[in-house]
Length: 209
Image 1 (cartoon, rainbow, N blue to C red):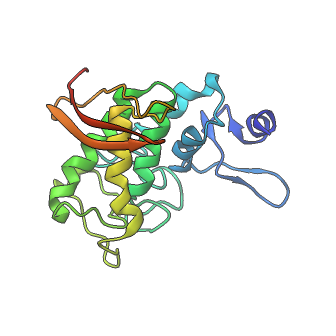
Image 2 (image 1 turned 60 degrees about the horizontal axis):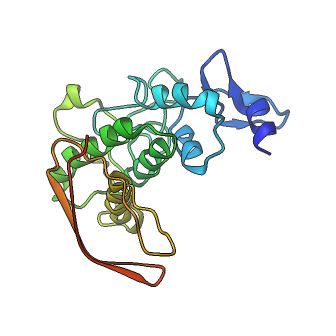
């Protein structure tokens, strides 16, 4: 399946994966945040990982707060379109985890910094979605009128971002960590962290980047 996926979905002329195949098996070439979830799934070929990461952090997708659901050069793009241009915090947490999975830890931290910068504008409760305007244009993240806040998958986004920053991995002897924190975070302290029957009583993780 992985080999067929590369064959059918990779668009060498665009430098990213297609969004889908139509009824005639022709690729739909929109640039979307879905390519970050491909990294998270592990299906991206190693030779395409760097270009995929570059697309995610490029001007078309990255707002400064997070990755848009659709690139600004695509016909369907609108910063206030739910699926075609807004920023979804839960989507960005999966993208960050995907970037880290392929070794792009600094890029993962770049997304984390964006979410951390956006969070105070929402009383530190990230919403379901917010508008995809560039940070340099608006100065603050723009509220999406009908976004739920709180919402379960957005509430889970900071937990996955923390897991990604710390490089937490379960093991038979308990969780292990391979931290790489953004400079803005001096340390994260973990207490009573449980995993597979083992408990870490206390651990303080400092800046390693």
